Length: 517
Ligand SMILES: *[C@@H]1O[C@H](CO)[C@@H](O)[C@H](O)[C@H]1NC(C)=O
Ligand SMILES: *[C@@H]1O[C@H](CO)[C@@H](O)[C@H](O)[C@H]1NC(C)=O
Image: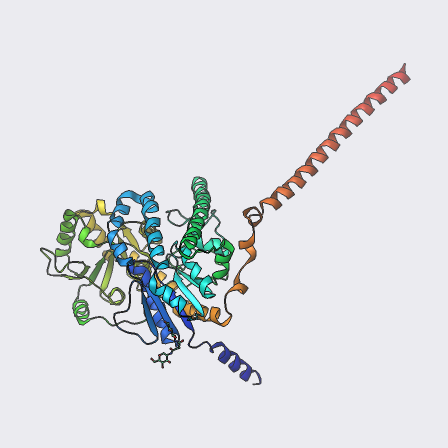
């Protein structure tokens, strides 16, 4: 009984973190990135923190303890590049590598130069922690140096290379496929060579990337930030990852997987959707190509085929579509520019999700246990969908293969064959079967960083080692040399002894002869 007050006081001292000042920097014009930040920040505000969110998406309705800083110019920048998402589809991975960094660099610069951010810096406001979208935007780390605040990057793609540079997370190319390639865990020899090659290339690219962002810091603030300073500023990384949707892999103590944290435990949906789904006695399908690709840019023939197939189905269909109406819209199709995706997927009548396979959509499909017909367009979608197919809850159909026959076959297979639903239900159970709901995990670690004023105690020494020490190349070389020396020495001794022995027996022989003579 004596222990109880101790426990209570420990719990109390843990919960003291109240009303911390938290700054968010969600610089990117992609809505799906911003959603993660907005959901996390609303939760932090709900738990009594004073949050300030710098982003191009100010809240439409005021939220208590949530202040917006509008990053102007970013949405315009994104809009001027809206075609690039279709270009990336046509141009494949190399096109993505070419156009994506340009977009990030430009939006990073707009953020660094933002007048309101400058005003906030000069206002003397102190922040206990800065949480930022982590998307190749290293120069943003400089705000941590300016405010002397630890930074928590949120990796919306899950943990990517750039995160491992700053945390020393193991990323063995022997069994961890690189980000952005469709490789299995049990790679063949050739695949491992390819994966190792990508590993080396990414090290070179990241080196250049760090230098580029150091120059941005120089340009906008006339200051320097070393790689070590960048790493020290990062307290820990919250990663949108979980083994239900990525291959299992190690995480160091300062990478915290929180995949699924953005999914609300319950969500109301507007009556229009509720009534439509409630009345879908045969079941319903949800069709959305996400927020970056506009379904209005679909080729006319493809759209025609899609609508034809829909009109022959016994199901009701919710179609996310950016126009007011579609020509020849079948009766069983409801179109809407905005759709409450989670609430729709959570509805019992929804049997299938036709999706581009963005990571958030993939996680939501798993969480709500809805099989997926994947039409990947660009970037990580081309990895997420094949991975979903391998996990057994999806069928992939590329846009150029999509016609009346393939589309209707895929839909029927996914709905009529129960194995897809079985698989996705098992994964859903895995995603939900965690010691703490992922949002509570995220909040715990944010408050942990506030309580301990950073994350130095979580850092492993690996980041301080040069590559040849990290991979023990020097030690392996040393030990190999010793073993080689011993072998060589033994060989020489044995040869010497054999020679001596031969000579001796020759001499003995001669002696013998002499004796005989
Ligand atoms: C949060 O908002 C509530 C009500 O709006 C207010 O009473 C409280 O002081 C605020 N907390 C902080 C830390 O600003
Ligand atoms: C809350 O944050 C704002 C900056 O957005 C700051 O001006 C204000 O002083 C903070 N409030 C408290 C109670 O610290």
